[in-house]
Amino acid sequence: MPEILYEIPVNDIFDRPCECPVCAMQKKLDDDEVAFAMGPSYMEDDIRLTTDKIGFCAHHMQMMYDFENRLGLGLILNTHMQNITKNIETLQKKKRNGSKRLFAKDTGSALSDYIKQTTSSCFICDRIKNTFKRYLVTTLYLYEKDSDFRKKFKNSKGFCLEHYGMLYDLAPSHLNGQVLVDFTNDLNEIFLTNFKRVQEDVSWFVDKHDYRNKEASWKNSKDSLPRAMTKVNSILSEN
Image (cartoon, rainbow, N blue to C red):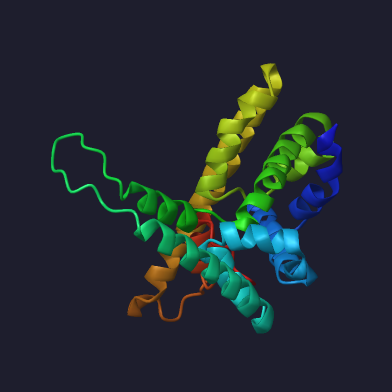
């Protein structure tokens, strides 16, 4: 069963305190694939042909820049931009349809389609997609088959809003009967309980700035903003 291949990384991630284990899964995959893209692979012809065509999303491009292999990134960008230039020059030669008739087809759409395709594709996202899905499926598999993992799941700090929704939607395709009921109940409870916990920490962070609370304890609110950013926007702090 494919899920067995991912049991160790999924278990390891749930062993570490985190406001969203799925965000941690995503970050691990991001880090691994950026290291791959910025390693010797960019000198391989088949990889370079693919990156020249597909390119990278803004998120992964920034990660590649931060990886600090500037020469490697320069080589990747140079041939990618050359490829874009060649394609744009070809598509620009196709004249627009000047007709203003209703439903008339705009021959400039080939250029628009190319730009949309190029700006919405990402070599790293494509490589991550299937593995990330397997991580989620493995989470469901372990919940059903491993009682120790189920305890980890129930004792976790919950999930961000986006990944809560992903697990909620994915569960009926891989669980059924009482296990699905139990998973849904546990998922709902740990999400809402922990979402409220972080919201209350943010609330106290705000109240603590009231002069009347100057001498009061910060409680657990000092790092509440980055934790709230994880819950609401799936932004995982480095700390």
